[in-house]
Amino acid sequence: TGPLPLPERTRVFVIANQKGGVGKTTTAVNLAAGLANGGLRVLVIDLDPQGNASTALGIDHNAGVPGTYEVLIDGEPIEQHVQQSPEADNLWVLPATIDLAGAEIGLVDIPGRESRLLRALDRLLQRHRVDYIFIDCPPSLGLLTLNALVAAEELLVPIQCEYYALEGVSQLLRTIDLVKGSMNDRLRLSTIVLTMYDARTRLSAQVAHEVRTHFGAETLRTAIPRSVRVSEAPSYGRTVITYDQASAGSQAYLAAASEIAQRGVAAKGQS
Ligand code: ADP
Ligand code: MG
Image (tube, rainbow, N blue to C red; front, top):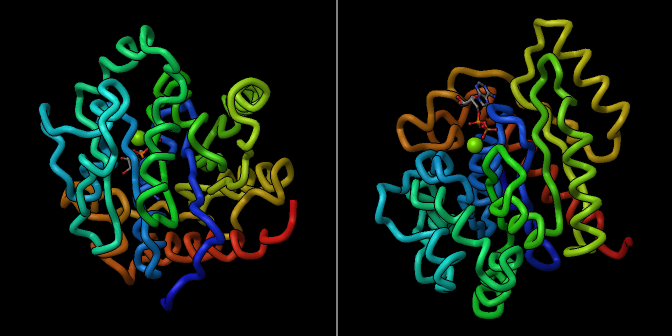
């Protein structure tokens, strides 16, 4: 795979779906690694107290490691706490620890509680070039996810090719409309990624068809196949991109990353 095109300016993605286990974290880290593999400068912000994105990118996140919590609650600069991922020279992570679970409550009494992340990102981007930012959200629509929805311009929704795939998506879209109307008018659903696609089952094909019927323009052509290599990579602190570059899962995430980068360029001059 060759170099990917630079976006006109930083693209900030929030990866959200309040359903757990649909592939949010897996998609965040592997798209990030795919874009970094194409030579772009990429930051992953781990907004889930479980810290799964930090783990998958090889970053220690024991309690006490500073990261997202200090940025949101204490107002510390992002650059003070980002760590470079061993996955690539141009891939950084703002780690999350279990302490972040307390931020959901801790934010309530802080002024501008829903725009803490936005302000931190603005400050970072005044000083540093970052091409892509992926914010990995917890499976809920609380204040942490709200911070991500306020800070991002593009919503990326992973949809698992399973029963009830679209369940919750309409609730998510209603939330987006609320956020758009009051806190962030730049936010738009830009990308849907079909995950855990199983070509052997009719169900996967049916779900993919249904999603493409509703969201034809947003859904990436590349669907991510269900693959053991994808699911085992995090236990080695790796993305599938470096863990097994030739595997079907890795090739799919690389293709998806390339689609996203190309779309960003194609979108220039529109809107
Ligand atoms: P979420 O962040 O939405 O909760 P995860 O990304 O953690 O979801 O994925 C849920 C589980 O599914 C994890 O165990 C992950 O390894 C697995 N998984 C995700 N994508 C794939 C895939 N393409 N093939 C196989 N397993 C996958
Ligand atoms: Mg997750």
